[in-house]
Length: 237
Image (cartoon, rainbow, N blue to C red; front, side, top):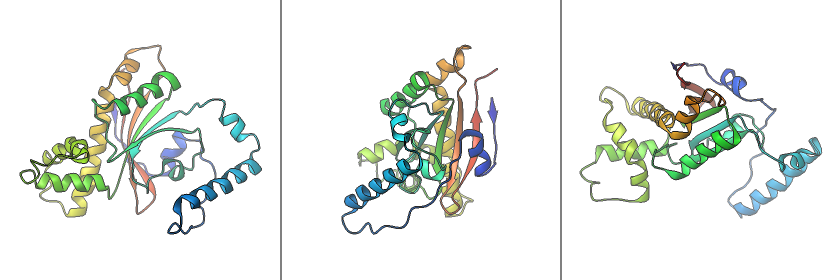
């Protein structure tokens, strides 16, 4: 069953996540030895967690029971735990360029299979975002199909289904920003379609004794920091 919704931000997150207090860490100078900066930040973070919840890591090490599988983009500006105020253990994660879910991609399929069949997640969330570099690259490739016909790289092969999707859209009346947003939204809906066609989901939906799994399509607005839900799909009654 398809249910479309356009509810923003915290309302959506409260339905799926236990929202924890969160704050943005202080800005750090990443220009000098960025890896050491991360190691130092990790030490500070671990100490602060232990101070607040002394047994957190001991309990976390025993098992994971997240209710959410997040399939998102590799973009550094969309860190799932930060933008949903979540803690380690709350979200099972798979990320790649332009938040793709190809039905022939063993990496994504293995994550989905493990999440649904072994962990028992209840929600699969496919998340795109505004100003997506992968979507921009695919839009450029769609304009220059003839010029790029002889060029094949891992990135162009990975994005080729998205490029084909863009070529099927009518973007002639759209401004550049409108076209990009339309592509991002169409991409989210397409990847949700792919997830719903995958074996782990069709099997779960066909089994009346299996745990209920719902598939969501979300779009994160980089300029606002909020998530909009585009589509929700459940097993057919």
